[in-house]
Image 1 (cartoon, rainbow, N blue to C red):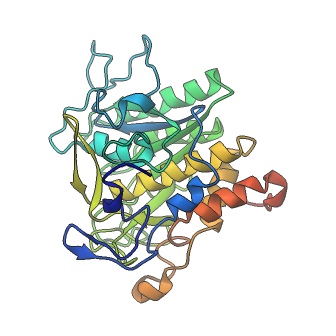
Image 2: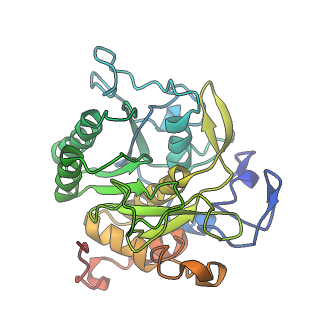
Length: 327
């Protein structure tokens, strides 16, 4: 890519370069450029970022944001339909950039940079759960209303406990052929022992975070509830007011996976959401060698975009047909 800050995106292409004063291990990445030789995304694949909103005029994002029309995308503020990111840490804007920042010779580039972004702003304060469920249900309704599109949801947040409305909304989205990706959480906890919701729900792809050396990030949750792992430390992406910056967290790992779901579906829109999930999980790279104390607790491994889009191209007949969500 000709985006000038691509060298900082070690999660997409790790040559062993030094990023934010940390040097990496070559190929501890998701093999994004190799995947882009096959597909760079499709505008009929929509990545919904349910978060603090987005910098709607950001030069790296504006071209890829789905036209809103008269729709209300701000579930946090009554009477304000524009999901403008007002968070001090630019959380939603940062997540959007990793998912699908444009290929435009400016700043950075996203995993699925020819897919469209649909940022939905929610209130992430403790106890504000219903607006999260509303945003998820809105995406499911869009999937029903637009059968020629495919929808992926990225949720880089957690709740303090189980919430029936959110869980029902997630189940509704999955039932309507939506892929739902969640951050596993940042408590350095075994979620089999100390569940963190909604990342432990079986209907979602739960994502742990890795550092530039392919090791579990010190903050990342782990456990049998985790489905895959992805880069999540020193992630350079878009921030408010047209800027860019570093953030770390499973919040940053999840959009790598949401972007990959977008690429897989862009390669083959005949796949179901469960088949997209199957492709992602079955094409991961083994990272046990770098994580001997977490074998079996970082999901299927680190996602590999090249292998995933190659597998997607083989078509539904090549998939086992036996993949089910483990309850």
